[in-house]
Image (tube, rainbow, N blue to C red):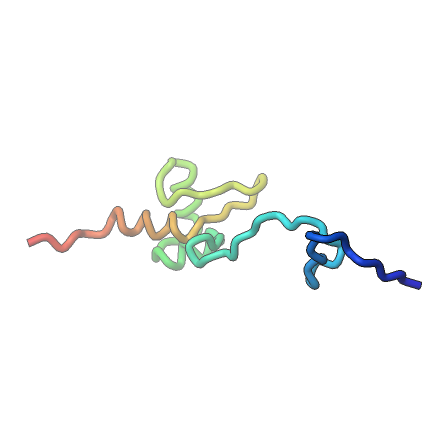
Length: 93
């Protein structure tokens, strides 16, 4: 049986979605710019082969990437966008 007690003055009850009242870590909702993309997806976006993406990583070229484990590589969408923008011609007169 659960015994209900009165909270001391000035103490707020725990939030309904967190019944234990444990503090939640600060989180922010992920945005599209924070999305992690697979090399095959980035290769398709850039019009190159996945093998080219692999070669660029080995040569230090291409978009910035994150190596999450031995074989798991991901690209942030914002880094792919920056890579494309850096190589796009400007509209100067």
